[in-house]
Amino acid sequence: MSARKFKIVTDTGCDMTNEWLEKRDVHVIKLGFYMNDTEYEGESNNHMTPEEFYVQLKAGAMPVTSQINPDVATKHMEALVKEGNDVLAVVFSSGLSGTANSFELAAKEINGKYPKQKVVIVDSLSASMGQGLLLDYVIKKADQGASIEETAQYANQIKWSINHQFTVNDLFHLKRGGRLSAASAVLGTIINIKPMLRFSNEGKLCVANKIIGRRKALNTLVEKFKATHTLEEGDPVFISHSESLQDALYLKGEIEKLVNNPITINYIGPVIGAHTGCDTIALFYKGIDRDAK
Image 1 (tube, one colour):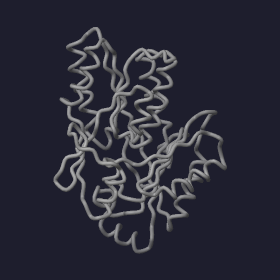
Image 2 (spheres, helix red, strand yellow; image 1 turned 90 degrees about the horizontal axis):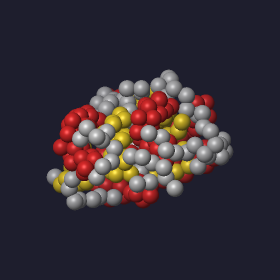
Image 3 (cartoon, one colour; image 1 turned 60 degrees about the horizontal axis):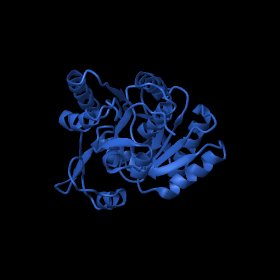
Image 4 (cartoon, helix red, strand yellow; image 1 turned 30 degrees about the vertical axis):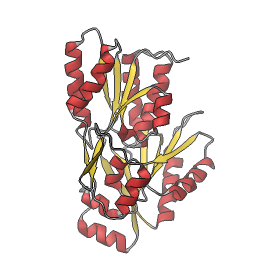
């Protein structure tokens, strides 16, 4: 039985399934995106599955994402506070979006109105299932009976160990997001370069290396994992992908040769996928300084 003393909130930047979040009693606020002049998720009632999203992306659709604004964050968290709950929110990286700032502004407003309750924001400095992995550790800490302050302190310590290692197949999405020049994207595509990327301690996307060939890129993820993981018994490993399940299963099989830890595979959701494109593979685990070159 859970000994949790407060409500946990996150956003859909974590790329965890609805079933996973519901089972752990996590309140989720949805990030939004526009595709073909239609708004999806966010506060709209329009839902699009990852499978549908990537079909449209491959067909040439150009999605535009939107952050959670302070009013939306306030509405969701204030409803929980009105029920007498303290709230801890683990949110999408401030290095990629203004969402974390929106949550901070909402928390300031709510804490001023309801002095008997506490709203605490943890900037995950993570994205996709890296944010989900941090959330997993936070949930376990909270369910052990830790206070909201103890859990927030724990989250802000362990987030520096949440490693994000991934490779992309479509360089033009990185170019569109300002991560690569047009010339680099064209040249890289011609010679089959697969960038190896990671997250910095500022929660930003960094190119760590450039590998020629997809299989070599996947094996480089395995080598990086082997050299940097600090997993203990029971620590989870997460793999996310954007319509590249076979590569995700290959990566899972290679990781299973190294450790006996639980491994979960899930889709990269539309909001993250809008920036990474199809055929991205990402690996998330607890390891040494994630900003190590």
